[in-house]
Image (cartoon, rainbow over all chains, first blue to last red; front, top):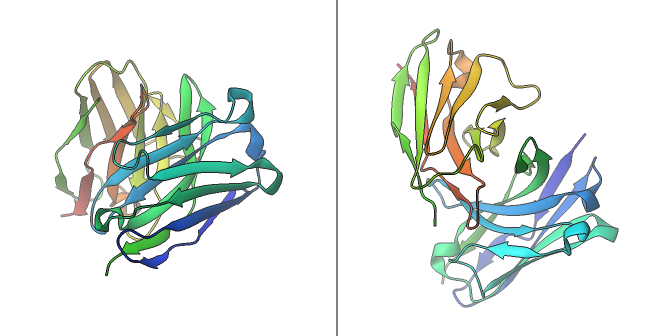
Length: 123
Length: 107
């Protein structure tokens, strides 16, 4: 059974930092791309970042809203995905989901999602 | 950047109804489109990928169609468990983006 469990959320002041983690099991982590997606309270989904697999040199992509402040990384030996978030702003407050990205049909699609971890940026 | 616009934003329907949600892309995205269902307090669930392929385990009352800039998600006969919010997402190029969502409510 595929499982993704996020952790590391909490309350942080504007300008502060937080590191989210996503522990995965039930699939070969090293084969898959991974995404972070967030959802502000009462709002829609926003894609945040992608980390490709070793075969694709662990390359990364970011949304413009987080580029230069957030860093996505992974540790294949620990089946873990991370999101280092620096210079946090109030508008970064959201539930953060990690998602397993699978090659399906014609491309890489987020096929399985964790339950999310809440980040609140407030003074 | 490619934007997605869903319509309607809110939809009220009854059990047994056939409903259609539209997702329009600001430029052509071939068939690099996914549909998700999200229930309150839960993670999104992948329903359809490649614009029209049903994800494993998803009931056949769900179907997707379209290519280029216009896409639809159809539920052929609404069941009580289908009342949720639905999102489209394009995967054509970065940054990836979601539509604003369609909230499907019980009439």
